[in-house]
Length: 75
Image (cartoon, rainbow, N blue to C red; front, top):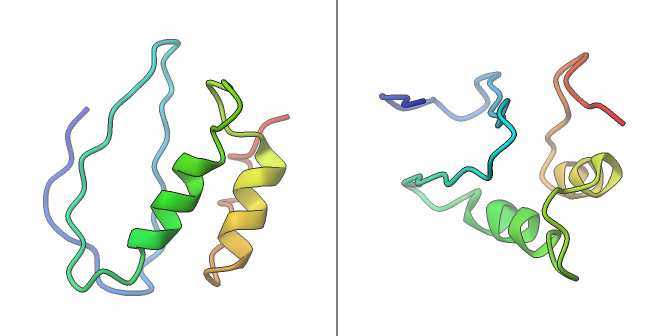
């Protein structure tokens, strides 16, 4: 899946990997306001886990005034 264009700050949006195989995301951030956010999500995959737990994702989001889209967080 590819996406083009940019999002203005504060615009509602989401991203997900609906498939069963690992995905790679390449993003450019200017300015780099959310660069550390994505680093924290990446770091939440430590300890050999292949998926981020819903609670770990929500905890990271809360540090950046971000929240899950309704119905998209699955247990």
